[in-house]
Length: 100
Image: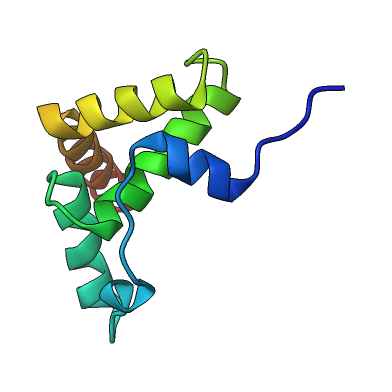
């Protein structure tokens, strides 16, 4: 049976840069939205690192990447290229159009 890596060891080897949680505190939905948009607009910081890490793990779990590290690299590239923001904008426009 394959041994699962601990979250600490994955974070340590992922290349993600973490800072204290207090940098993630928001007071309301508008601040939360702003933090998410900054992260997917490739703004440096803990929020982007968490998005990159989670996306990288998801890519690995979905068999899109051969390792978590590779998934993290793919996620970084998609965010840096602007493709993540374009996809989000497309999703928002579609849902608004369908909501009529």
